[in-house]
Image (cartoon, rainbow, N blue to C red):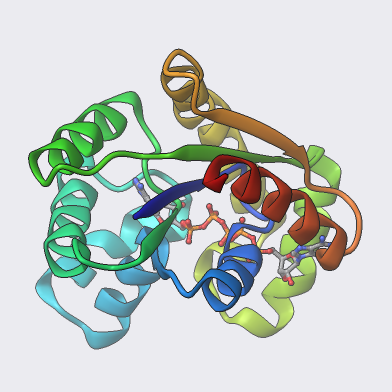
Length: 192
Ligand code: AP5
């Protein structure tokens, strides 16, 4: 089984590339952001609790997303592989993720970081915001807050995987095809 963490700041292209990787490698994909947005759209109790986090660009509480991923792992432990998009986002999430995977005899194979400068991130998200309807895409202020949260709380997670020799960084600039090729090169190198 191939377990890939797609990592990077908001707007770097995680969701875009995850969809392509899913298709190419026949592996599954989970986005904690999507799971939370679905809960909100369905008006569940959890969704109502999560709404204020999403709209202000703050991270949801660790235990909420850890429980989501625990459910996902339980349902996908026999998959050919998995792409984790937007998780883990704190060191605590990463530690719990390792623990949950190892309980199932599984592990993360690689974290792939897509490096994109802040101005390009803002530009991409503002462009998407016109059509996405995502509450956290609507204003530049919230977009910049999300990027700030990424630098303050999430970027450090790269060190967690670097220490395990599982970190790869790629240039996230260029066409979607160019970025996809770079990611595939990393994946193909670890599958050999
Ligand atoms: P989440 O849904 O994970 O959003 P995000 O990290 O902010 O990332 P985005 O979805 O905005 O961007 P992306 O990197 O997927 O880029 P995309 O492919 O869409 O999280 C949302 C919220 O949920 C968080 O703020 C938090 O509140 C909560 N949450 C989620 N996970 C959590 C966790 N683990 N812990 C706590 N809270 C959590 O691309 C962006 C745009 O750019 C698109 O329009 C795309 O078409 C375009 N694009 C992509 N690639 C290129 C390219 N190469 N060139 C030009 N344009 C491109």
